[in-house]
Image (cartoon, rainbow, N blue to C red):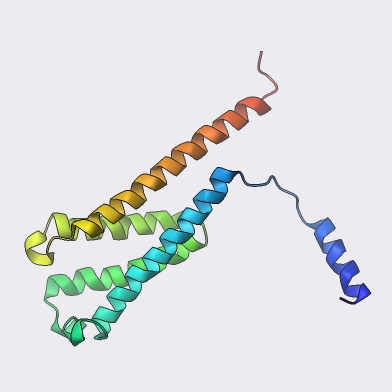
Length: 156
């Protein structure tokens, strides 16, 4: 690396904001959200492959689906990639969009099994992801609460 570039990089690092390092729980939570993003993208690709005729021998194409399936599958084909982006970027709306998509799929297979069929594995997968998410949020809440107590200066 040229000397001028090395000096520029060192100056940039020195100017960078030095925030607190993320805890192990925060790092694992970020990793979990990124894995959930990959799963959401996989679901999105499956829906798009079906709607465009690349899977099921072309029998799941949009023009061949019943109206209920058209509405549900197109909504999920849009919601899952948006959720994947939000989860990958670790923004607050990512889990919300994922929850809407997961609740839609759960409702499809649990509330309307005569229309969409029963898919217990899918329902259990969404339930497990939601449970792990809630456990991470509780762990982060407890961790931040402990940190806030140790930082307080007005404690007796």
